[in-house]
Length: 263
Image 1 (cartoon, rainbow, N blue to C red):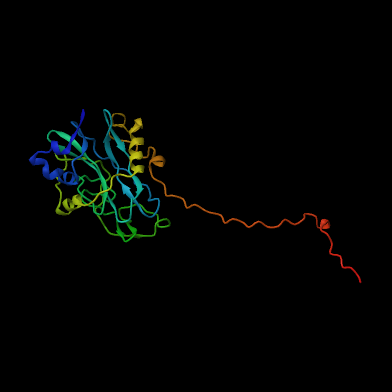
Image 2 (tube, rainbow, N blue to C red; image 1 turned 60 degrees about the horizontal axis):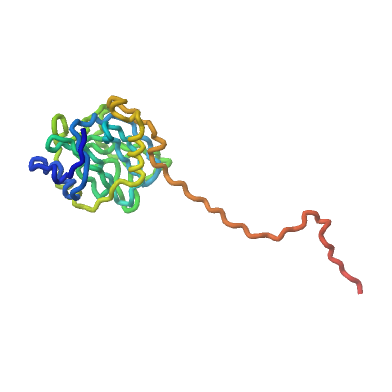
């Protein structure tokens, strides 16, 4: 069962801290349901397709009457310097509310959910921006150095190959609350999901095998991978225009001889 309601109307004093990151970003329509989402399954991350792509972790979305898995994907940041804050489900006043993800200068609160691949529950350890270039931590991000040269190695605690809780608060959810840094990130200017990300979610919602009732919480994470993962743009090759050359007669015998007249 689901219902659409305003975040601001749904908050109670005991839930304000957990939802403050979204409240500071503004009051908006969101999705509320009364059953918890399945655990986040473990899956392999595909290789980064090229420089400037950031990892968007997979998560459980909700359709007309069921949860469905949205596979993780690589997407180009809308502009240099922006990082992705994943969305999360949070328990508030007897319902699970979806807090949408966003792009911003810093990673905000995402419920303490361990999405893996750099999103351990707080912040992001998969890489960082240096001016206009993104540097990838190869310890936690799958990169091919033949394709992406901006890499480094910084040891981080890696997620075990098991499913983990996918929501904050309530019975069995994570107990995380926003840090001061995450609260500050919530006050910054944000950019919503890109058109490719929105198309990604729509495609996942139309794939029956990704519905929780069909996969029982264990989706095939490779489904539609080629369609949903944003591919790097190919450089357009422009061939220089050739100058028109004067055509010479094919048969040299047809050429008019140069006659020198004797005086």
